Structure formats: structure tokens, C-alpha cells
Image 1 (cartoon, rainbow, N blue to C red):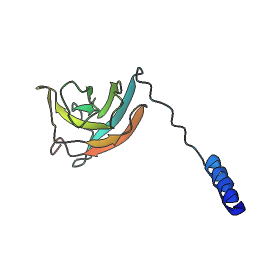
Image 2 (image 1 turned 90 degrees about the vertical axis):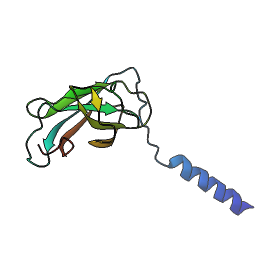
Image 3 (image 1 turned 180 degrees about the vertical axis):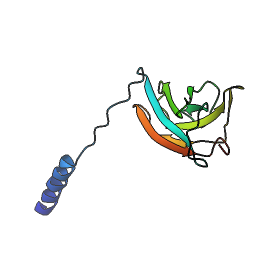
Image 4 (image 1 turned 120 degrees about the horizontal axis):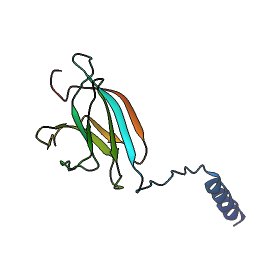
Length: 128
């Protein structure tokens, strides 16, 4: 019986001393940004004038927030998180407001914080 009590005390002590990670809650009213630079994986040159969008679900649509890359391939997209899933970056055709629903440039981008993705090498816009 003493052994059982000793084991219970040790277990409780170990559990209470274990490291807890406190992830700050996502503020759903705040505007967050995702930015990066698109570079052609074929020519290694910046992709200027390319439209990209962020999707917060598996069902992308034309209401997803988006941006067009500048002359250096840089983009910045602002969004309000809806609290589900991760973000996916995908190409769009700006002239037709069409979303390529079967192609992602990046998947599982963390949400609820400002995220700079750095340089993204992609072939999702053809042989640029």
C-alpha cells in the first residue's frame, strides 16, 4: 500500500512539473499578413504581375484574399482568420477572377500571425 501511495505522489509530481506550452490565442478581430517573393523555378527570375490568393479551407473561391506580385515578385496579403485549418497559397487568373482550385503554391501556412514566407520558388505559373 505504501508503494502505491509513493507511486501516485511521484506521478502527480512529474505531471505537474512537465513543461506546458502556452500558445497565445488567435485574435479573430485582428488583421494578419502573409508575404513573400515568388521566383520562377525555371528561370530563377522574380515573377512580376502574378496574382495569388490565400485560402483558409480546402474549398478555394474567388472571395479569398489576394494580391498581385510587384516587379520584384513580392506580394503581401492581408486576411482575418476564421479559425479553421491552415492557409494555402494558390495562383489566380486576375483577368477572369478565376481560382486554380487544383493547384497550390504552398500548403499548411501557419495562421493567426504575420508570416513572411521568404523566397518561394514555383513553377505554378508555367515556364516563366
